[in-house]
Amino acid sequence: MYGGQVNRAFIKYTARLTGKSRPNICFLPTALADNDRYISYWYELCTGLNLIPHVMRVWVSSHSDDELFEDIIMSMDAIIVGGGNTLNMLGIWKAQGIDQSLKKAYESGIVLAGGSAGSICWFNGGNTDSRPKQLSIVRGLHFLDYSHCPHYSSEKTRRPLYHQQILAGNLSDGYACDDLSGIIFVNGKAEQAVSRNTENNSYFVYKDGNKIIEEQLEAELIG
Image (tube, rainbow, N blue to C red; front, side, top):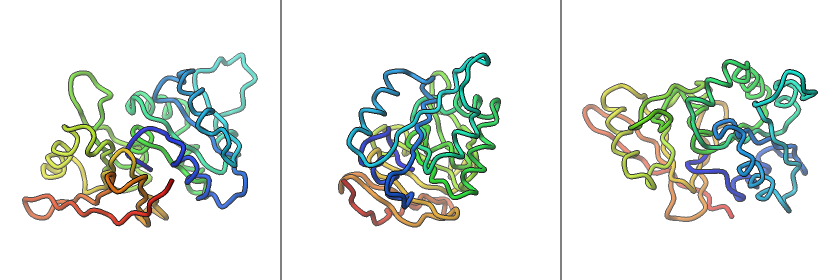
């Protein structure tokens, strides 16, 4: 998972994590309502990469011949979730049973990835701009038993609010990522941080008494 929107370097790295020479990778643009421009951008980013790109739309008709969501998910080597409205995305997933299909994929060893809404979703919770006026807490799928904060340094209100919520006990200790930084989790534990450059970093953020500790994770630079 990474702090910002989908980008070519993280798609390439996700493909590498599958261990396949030409993996099938599916993009879920649910958080932006299956926006056609976003989907076109996904295919543009994948051009020239050694993978087979797919998209799973959730705005479908019952009269269509589309595959079942679980069949699509379970046929992939990796799933990448895009950014947008986290709250709406999770609501649709739960209504459609996609959350359970993703859990099955996770337990089967399919690589799950994403940024922004696509990273918050895997954790137990985080702050979201999915509701009007101000950032508020959203509860994720709880595949990773930590809280999460994307856009950690790029959006000025994110970092102080994340600290306040952890101190208040509204969010658990967790991981924060700048837009171009990410973390690989294996079996529920952070194993490796990665970054596009030295200016973007990932952090473990936790409460120690009445103060917040922010530990920067050593990152592998990827291109």
